[in-house]
Image (cartoon, rainbow, N blue to C red; front, side, top):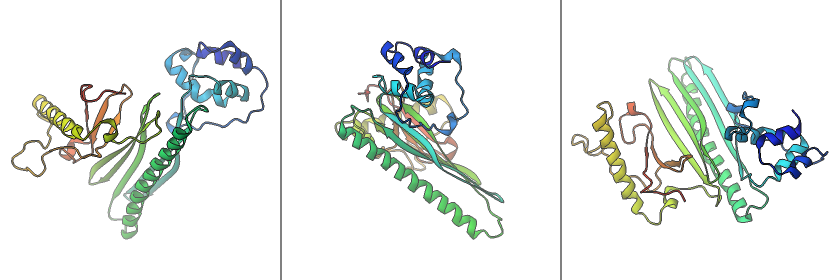
Amino acid sequence: MTTEELLNAIGDIDEDLVAEAAQPETTKVISIENHRKNRKKRWNKAIAGAVAAAAAVMILLPNLSVSVAHAWEKLPVLSTIVKVVVWRDYHVEEGRYEADVSVPKVSVEPEADTDDTVKEQLKQSADKINASVEELTDQIIAEFESGLEADTDLQGADSIHVGHEIVTDNDRYFSMKVWVLEVMGSGYEQDHYYTIDRSTGKILTLSDLFDDDSYIETISEEIKRQMQEQMDADENVYYWLNDPDIPEWNFKQIPKDQSFYISSDGALVICFNEGDVAPMYMGCVQFEMPKTIWQAK
């Protein structure tokens, strides 16, 4: 397929840009690395013109030729590119000890016309996320290696798995989940969420989405309502809510820095790890807030 055909497949691209793509160019190409889940993907002709095609072409096209990359950079529809790559893989198998840790790294590529303050903030946010993820995974690996070293005859067992998932990646928000699963007799999972507001470049906290602290009570009461509704509908669902036998465990309210993410359709989702508000068998639980509580800005 020719360069012109590739560009035309995207649809509605300025003809001057298409013509320019056919001209020789000496601009240096910076290859865009993809998350390892995408390494084995192949695109096919049937997706041209669809939304999925636009996403796939955006990743693949700049790597195909210098002239295409040069023309692509001039398209006004591109927003800040947030890239996530696996920069460290840690694998161990010793007896019944197993570790499979994939550490993600976030980088950003702002548009040329992005405000300088936002550019700097985006870079700082990426660095902060990377430092947080590195600290988290270093601690997990250190604890695993300490247990392995102490068990000289390998009579014990430990299994840790760390990975990540891009939860949201749209024009306004980028959200990534880093999940940690440890199995020692029974499994225990923790999810860590990071959300960047592309318009400001900042990492969002829950308090950033509201004008004052009243959101704490409002969201907490909505969570209690959903908990009770779920338990009434399914006898297998159980939360620590209004239980007279364990009053100290009953859910009362979220902390100010409660874990959350913003979904691709703009919903605010409150997240809890295993054992936070329910027995371990319930796993990590989430509660989507109605738009009456929070409207995507």
